[in-house]
Image 1 (cartoon, chains in turn cyan, blue):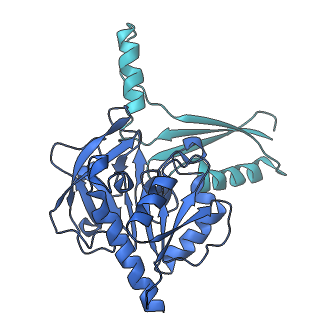
Image 2 (cartoon, each protein chain N blue to C red):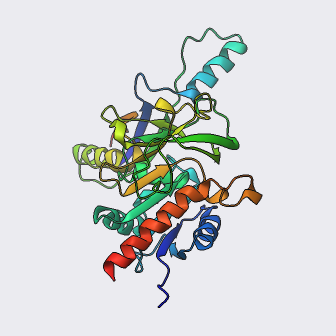
Length: 81
Length: 228
């Protein structure tokens, strides 16, 4: 089963990477008000059902993929899985 | 009869680069350094543990995150939970935060630039096993060299846990409250971004790092004698 995990810096957490991207885009003339930089992780997991896969991936996020102090995560299961 | 030196373990992760400097400094200050491989599930007989600087596992995912799950770190966690002395320097500090042995987390420097220079520190707590040779308020000159040293404090961080601060105007990374080093609530685990092991001889620009490492060696020796 294929899934994608999106990890983002929480609201209010300083994101210097995002600020650098934002100012670079502005220098290039793009009308950007804010940029935040997160992380995307594609996974292929073995699970009996989408619900079981989601539960397993939530545990992965809590243990390793995201740090709850500064990051929040979203899980997207691929269509048809 | 001459007493044996205290044994201080130095963890070696793939990507550690200050492990040998730490071992050399500890040896110069009277300890017997013992290198501990990250894959070892058990620690040898030790009186203290140092997690050295570097880029364990290439800083993949988040700095320190992968190392915090290594077999040796499970053993270090048990050692710390039993009251053992653990000092984390730079990447070692990041590993301690990711392992949950210290509160908070280290984030990319606010400047997004790698900083490598001497900084002045202020000793906030001189009553820890890692700062006992210092006076409260003492200034120490110790180098930093990191890209991710901006300390993000949890909302409930107690003031007493702030052991070291950057001196006014010297914060190199945007750390909250100028924090350079913190201890756990029990006081047996300290993490700091500056590198005391690079400053144990005036020939290296400063000898002030020895105040911290010699404090650790003193405390490890006390533990050794208490056990004997």
